[in-house]
Length: 181
Image 1: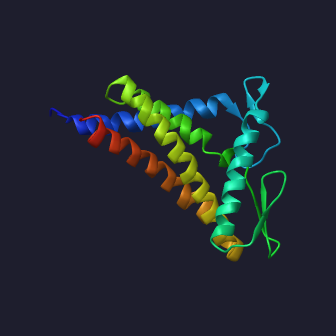
Image 2: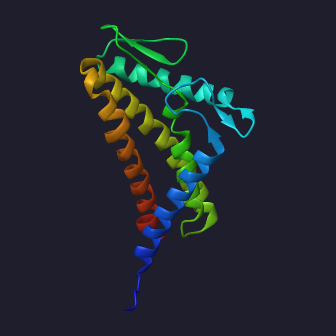
Image 3: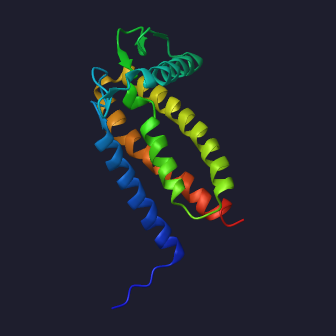
């Protein structure tokens, strides 16, 4: 039996392989708990300071977005967002979308197409990924402050896999619309 894959099927297969390998390389390189901020190492180097500006800007924009949509909250110094009902969420390094941005850049490096347009598309997508992440945090925070029991489902399952699906859609848009031009 001969398997004959189309260009599209080869591209999807390449996407999945690169996504899983990039995720594996990230987990192999970065030591630390994604949900806490005590330890974050790249080899022997403590890289927490690298993530600090991303944590604070993500938390600040998420709290501004929540306030814009009528959810009263206050941003604390550490990236924690406090709600009026005494509920709080904390934005930690795993919430910055830096890992997902790394994975997307890896996917695009191995995607078909010319280098210069890929660089421009990557830059646009990295900005988009950042803002999608801010919306994700605001939605999770807004819903879970009213329904705390939904936090684990929203944060750890629904929006986690939705985020990777969005990465797939960004790659698909490149593959089907831009790269073909």
